[in-house]
Length: 201
Image 1 (cartoon, rainbow, N blue to C red):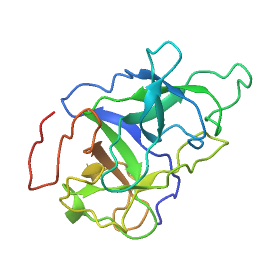
Image 2 (image 1 turned 45 degrees about the vertical axis):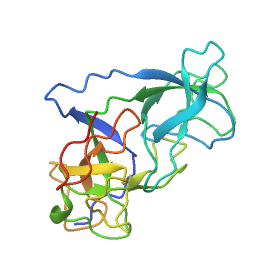
Image 3 (image 1 turned 90 degrees about the vertical axis):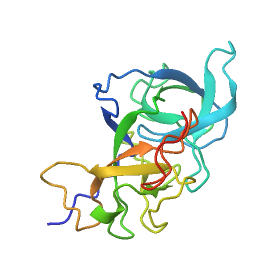
């Protein structure tokens, strides 16, 4: 039976240090024409801050090698102009809640371009799907990319830890769900592939 093709971006599910994922987030500001943003989008700092200077500006990451990630959007503060809006529209101001803990483990769906296999566990991989999402659910369209073959490459964005242990997850097919760490993290690269070991944090 085929895996359900239901993209959701990066979803925090666990913690590398044995802690519970604690919902600790950082308030960040989105402004300008950086594209729409969704829950589950990987983001990077955008080189500025809000008017108070206390909260950094962020934008969706450019997917691919060498593109660091600051964190993942896990929610938005309510928009007083539209309390039903579940995502951030392009060229609007919005407060985002970002998980930027480099030790949080995320679940993500593999894309449809090929089958990510068990032999790719321990390899680095990149994202695909910048600025794509579902305006009805507010969920990201980012996925784990197969076409850029996962490998022990410190310039890739994610580290594949293993398949999600859910009964409806068939790793022999496309769109399987995988657990990953952000390996090219803005707060310090953690892993650079299966053979390279720890990087300085």
